[in-house]
Amino acid sequence: KPFVLVGQQFVADPSRGLVLWSYAHVPHGYIERYPGEVREAIIRQIERFAPGFREVIVDTHETSPEGLESWNPNIIGGDIAGGAMTGAQTVFRPKISPKPHRLRSGLYLASSATSPGAGVHGVAGWWAAEEALTDLRNIVTKLKR
Image (cartoon, rainbow, N blue to C red):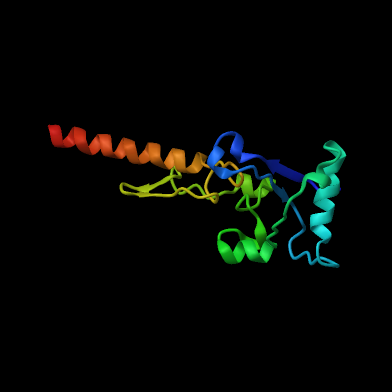
């Protein structure tokens, strides 16, 4: 019974259409024993909580871990979270400075490789943007003097 994450983005953005997106984790390097094996496991898992789901499926599209990585090289091995969240990875995540999202004025880091870490979508970018705005305010303040 795989872990399956589903989302209906059209609820927040009707332009996305009546589509159900799903994601299921497979072990790194996993190869299906037969075509459609993972799709079938996902459908069975959704059926556990939404009986009759299979009957309303109009079409399916799937992307393998290799396909995801080919589409976006940051999705190594199909890992949409962008990296490990092991204890060691979290503790020893590089701290370039007291503010890891600011490398220097004008150079900011906003990736899942920075804290708070993989899977915390958007937070690193938010913090990097805050650093950039702080630097910009400081520059403007100096120019006004």
